[in-house]
Length: 240
Image (cartoon, rainbow, N blue to C red; front, side, top):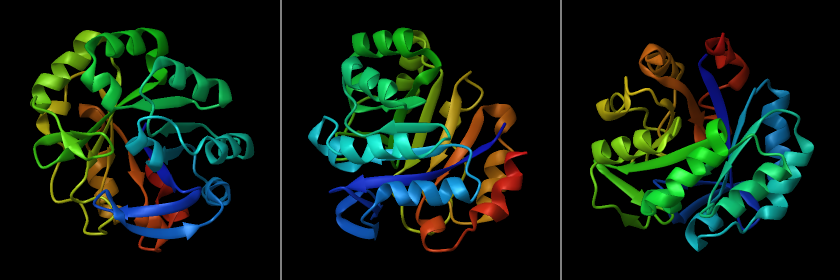
């Protein structure tokens, strides 16, 4: 099944969108992130994507109060990420009601943690692969790893990871549309792939849905929904 994930990104307790992951280029859409979450739920979303942007930079969950309220207010599954770098933090979010936990920097830097997370969390783990060109960025998109994407995919598969979130940083928040397909290293590998970054039109979503047989599971949509370039009710038929 192909799924559309409306994004709720939180910075300073507010719902925001960034431009290309730049924390200095912030657009604030609401002082109450849970109200945005409820809006997407009311418009028919079947799953939400919530990220603690401050947490991604700090290396620990920062906006837990806002995240907790979202998890309490909405009655649909939510995947949560941003600064989740220990199993303890991951388990805390699951105990709070998250359906999935997104981990990036921590598991990509520590093979032992990756294996432990994959074994302990199973299908509830989403490994975040944030791409700036051909390089994988970590630490709130402030650093880059020295391994290739293919090397990382091999590590993920060997560790038992089942699902990844692939974000095109250079397209994220730009409303420029997708420049091309998904990195071939991620397709036909037995990984479920959720795509993010630059999704602006129904056509972007249709193209991604055509890749479901090759592993694509869905797409995260942010600024396009917030600024009206896409209407969530008008694209939810693609989930059928």
